Length: 209
Image (cartoon, rainbow, N blue to C red; front, side, top):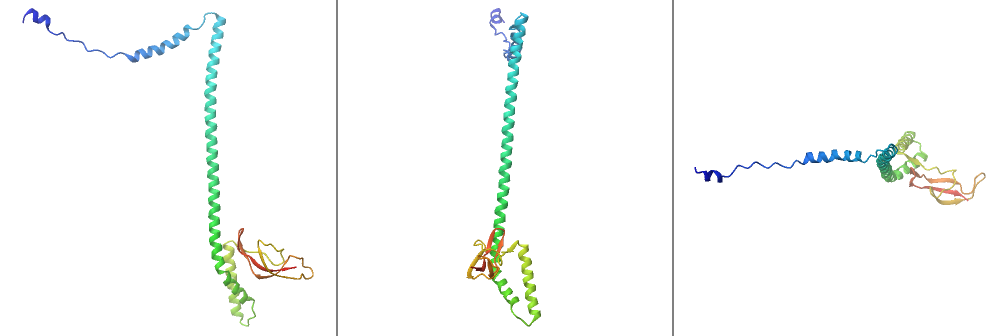
């Protein structure tokens, strides 16, 4: 091999190394406190004032963070209270709707059998020589009354009570007798029933004039 070929042969190149970014970043971070320390005045009075201002800034920053955290906690508490109140309202509303639906169903069913109870009561109050027959009718009425009580169905008070158009249906008036007040129910033609505040059937009554 000639000397010229040796001189012109390509020389191996060393691989390029990536720039060292992390050390530079760490160096910049380390330079920040150093630069801050350079700003500290040397005069004792000025130095004390400088540290006082620095502490005041740090205290203000901490207070701002604490105020923000307190505000966030207050908002979270308010949201929880609102959610709890909404759930409580929903629970009460659902319970009320369920009770109303149940009462409507019970009221409809009871209304269908009231005429049967009316017939049984007329049979129980009629003159009958067969005591066993009458006893059986009375026992049936007692069981029907117990069933209505279990369903929270109540008989509407009528006789001797002041007439109430919300509860009573007046079909006749007659002169008040001694000791009777005008507007008092003096006779019941047909019993009335209610469940809670819901009227199943108004009481059909006679009212004193």
